[in-house]
Image (cartoon, rainbow, N blue to C red; front, side):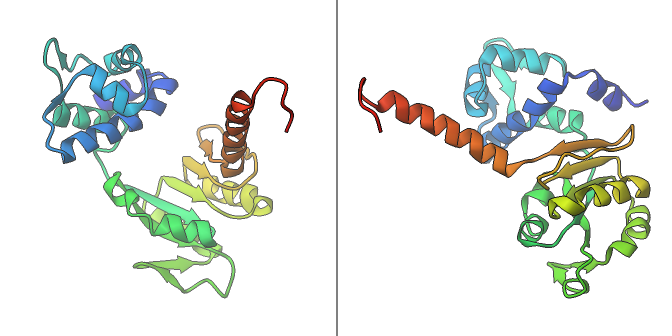
Length: 224
């Protein structure tokens, strides 16, 4: 096992979930020409407490200098390495509806260390088309293209009823990491990591927070 792989395995999941926010903040600082930042400045930019930031970064090693802070470029490289972004990751997207096409055209893939290597949809009216330079292939080509292009990350943007079938096909083809945008809970074989992005749930949470704010703004004894 490489040193980078060993380091990634020892980092707690909660810390891993925050590392992309630290990297985003560091990228913003670098674009503004900032060479070094304090833990307080970086924590504020990332939306966490400085104590949490320092604890998270301690899992990567000691990169801060007392009285100086963190060197922006160096810390960004170390976080990128811990996240596995020191290499380019090919991604396959299944489901060429509006969301799938938007993700396929998303420029953040390239800047984030990923590139869309394959697109799939079983709709014959969609197959053969392109999003950018990438051809939309039928699902019958999924196993061959995933293996020939060494794709390890799959994204599901299909309707819920077909999401499990797509997940099964991805896993059988060798995909080990799946990002699921379909409104469905998927089961996957051992060794295959599935992360769910439920836009509806996130909107419900925001609606709940908004309702709480509205209730605090209402004078006591006044019903809506």
